[in-house]
Length: 455
Image (cartoon, one colour):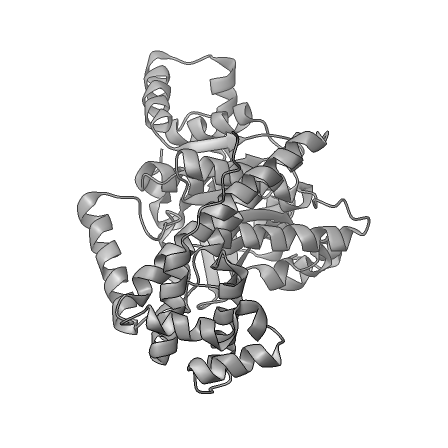
């Protein structure tokens, strides 16, 4: 005869947990950081635990009498079995020493029940047969990740323990060659100001079109993946993966991209390209060149890649092409939704996210030099507010021809390729200006001090 299988639970562990609280009120401070009322399978036990936590939250005495009064005021005392049930909980629990062990059992089995529920909800999504497959997958993944994330509740940590963990991670990274805790951009002047790329930071790289922001982002991706063995995800909504690969190959080999594309290479150049190809092939750079992506798809794809291979940095090129999940009509509301989603992505995956951004047309209405400002991001919703770091790019040679420069700046060398990186916002540190050199034929940035030795 078929008998329905009950969800996993342990009534004895639930009763032992509650009994421990009734004989030792301080025991609740050992478990309230991870155990919630909804973790109890038996509803009456859920109500008793709620009564206990309510009393503690009001700084009132917690014992058998006060819990009975609390339940009575809520009209639940008779439903749980009256004062006799509370007395029974006390009688079957000789000591509160093992309260955390019992509570962990209750919490673990609650997670198992949530997994069963998640399976049903995911099945329902499948039966709905939503025509947007990516949206359906994002919902399903979100259900599973919610179970994982909700298992953990942050609690106070002693400063010494935090610093000890940080020290251990730093030593492990240096001695074992593991992936770095903090990534470097590969440009010492930028890394000095930012203190490297911090995990969970949303970093905006803003510039007018054709100033090289994609090239700078790719150079950072290369520096992280090749020099630091980091995993890098690149979402390129504007350029194809072939174009990006060619740019990376050009920068690594020192051979112009158009020459690589044509295949007209001499023996020496071919050797350089093959050597660069070997270096880049070993790099953990993953490129998604889907031309249309929404915020949910970005999160879903990033989560999947993190679980499959591990990633340490995400680059999005560029922000204004990503669209909000709900397809809102107002462009500013749309960008606000996208910006907040990307900040949430950085925090959720605990990686720095570099998002490229176009600037508003206001910058073009200024007199030369047309140096961008933070206000040029404001028309794009909450980007400035959400970002932890904002870097703005400016190139003098894009504002002045060589002839104009010589007439207005006599005796000064024409700054061809010189690029100002203005760190206009830095939530956790200083701002400042850094100069880089852009090699147009290689679509590659170099530090100014290293330019003489570059290929």
